[in-house]
Amino acid sequence: MFAGAAREVVFSNREVVRKIQQSFVPVALKAALVNNPPGGVEGRLYAEISRSKPAPQGICVANSAGKVLAWALSFDDEESIAGFLDYAAKRFEEFPDAKKPVTAERFMRYPSHKLRDVADNGKSFDVPGRHAVDDRCPGRPSVERGTLVGRVIGRALDKGGHLLTDTLRQEHYMEARFEIPLAVQKQFIDETRKAAGKQFQLPEAFVHSIVEPAYLGQLDVNPMGSVPESEKVRRSIEFLGQQISKDDDAKTVEIRVTGRSDIHGRHSKGGGDGRDWAHLVTLDWHGYIKVTEDQVKRLTLIAEGKEKLRWGNQRLLLTDEVDARHLMAGHPIDLDCGVRYGLIAEPASPKEIVDGVANRDGRPNVLAATPEIAKRLQGKMQHLQAGIKRWQKTGRNPARIGKLMQQFGPLMQQQKIKEAEALLDQALELIENDGKQESKPK
Amino acid sequence: MKNRLNQIVVICLLAALSVASNLLCADEKAATKPLSSDAVDAAVKALKKEDVAWRRIDWKTCLLDGLETSREQHKPIVLWAFIDRPIDDERC
Image 1 (cartoon, rainbow over the protein chains, first blue to last red):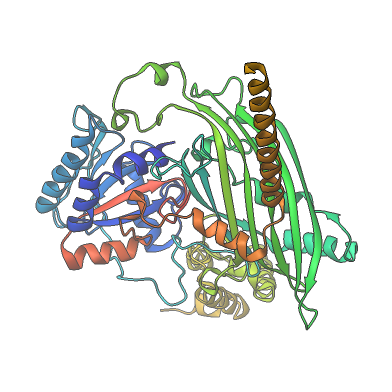
Image 2: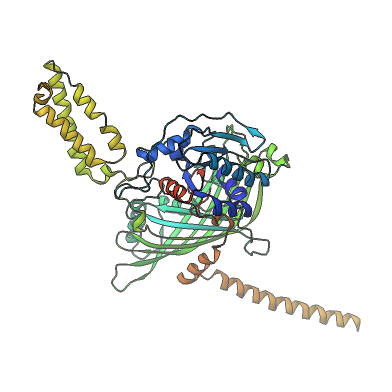
């Protein structure tokens, strides 16, 4: 919940937005990278930020060396948010870089509830100004070639069926990205071909990708039961398609799609943090999908229906505190209204494409993308292992090889394949020369 | 005489209701007719609001870029560690 509440209460606050735009450099980081830093210099910076974090998600101000000056998880009131920024800006004047050690101050709630400070560890890094040409930033989205990338927009309707004007709260207005992998698109294309112009049922995985993001509210209230501490109560989805046209070259066909989805989810019983919610979404769908021989080229769908969402445990419902004081819990929701959704999706743009399976940190997995390199490295590794065993049998000490290979793991982690292979070649040369260099007197 | 007038009023009302009902049915039929591909496209685009409060901050997503800008402009960086990509029009 924290991220949604932070966006609504903190980063939509007019004075806070003005202050950040004017006097700060705003950087949004994926919590997954802060909690599990990737390799390389950037990973060390993430680790430095992570070292003082009071919770897996949060807001902090840091200096130009990446040293945290202050964390805040919530605020006494709305004025305290700007107050926190002023306070951190003053600390920056005193500690703008790594020249002087600085403690990270941490606030459960600024300014009244302070946590223990975290001392500087004395480490500083030479921070490069940008990524090397072959070094993809872990903050950039990355998808497989052929992935269909879409955006869903959801709006709550008033009693007269008009769009609600509020766009701040996610239970009234939501936008989200969704992706449909190439393999799932191919299932849809196969069904289209098999139907040969007749009406057909859309494959489950394909419709699941469409229906799944169409709900109002924060991530936690996904009614499909696919997020932690949630469960599905009812899920009924049926989509039908029928080819309606074919381009002159017969390579692109258009399919008209109609469907109905009825989803009911809620918090799982015995959930850990006392969350209490239920969510029902019933939608009628209508739209068009254009496909070529092997890929979906465009998908446009509109859905209308009803949505009922309740979020908030007893404590949250009874409190009259301002939202800034309990960002972790969010605000209570009691929604029961008409809704409208729109989806548009097209193949991923070239700047998002990585050839190969993306790693958990968003980096492309170079080895998955280039199996011939993976096979070559594997062969060299086996050769090296056999050589080390041979050395051990003959009483030679392979310590030098071990020392040399210490860098192999970190280089592979950073996807520096060329450098890692060069290291491997050096080790193999040592082995193949049968330790001649090793035994040479210096 | 008064009863006769009442009967006429009732007949007129029923006739008016019948006309209104037919008109409503016609509207419903029009509404359920499938929208064209272009109409669906336009309907989806009409849902999006560009000027939402949470899109007014120019967030960077690269830590190296953020630190470089911080050094160049002598400004502290505000870091928002979040679960996914709420700055990229994303649900959070």
